[in-house]
Amino acid sequence: MHEELHRHRLSLLRRKRWLRRLLRPLPRRANVRRYPVIKWFAERAGRLPFLWSFKRSSVVPALYFGSVLAFLPLYGVQFALAFAAALLLRANVTIMFGLQLITNPLTVGPIYYLTYKLGMWLMATTGMTGAVIGVGTRVNALFLGGTVAGLVTALLIDIAWQLVAWEARVFRARFERLKRANEERTRLP
Image (tube, rainbow, N blue to C red; front, side, top):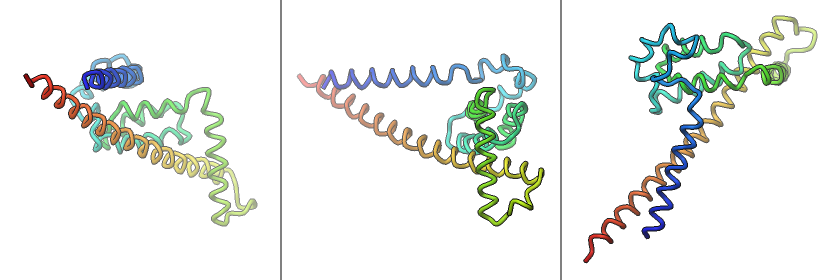
């Protein structure tokens, strides 16, 4: 029983280290002044706890809006828009910024091409013919494809996050059960 508790503790520590390593490059309340876009708002951002909260009420808006924003053709102003949206939606800024890293100089071309193709396909299935399609429609296709791709991505991330949260609850419950059993065993004469 004691070995199982020890293994469980080590597993918990590994998970925490992995999460810290994953979140290290993203802005936190302590290092917010380092980021060029946010440093102008650092004092105010430090006083707003919802920007740093990982409660579901702060995470879900950040997840959905951040995913949609990441796939829209707004490369270059995404971080400023993400910060403004985090303030308006009372969303987690760390998740919002992390999602903006999906589109980077290496991935922006393929992502925009695929979202454009998705948007054109969606517009064609609704009855728009090739003769009607012009420049404005191509931009609309890019925005439509980006919005749909962002929402689908957010939904998949949300489902994965809920599964991980459920697994963490099960893990904590088992850990507490093992801890109680170990304490009871050590109390016996």
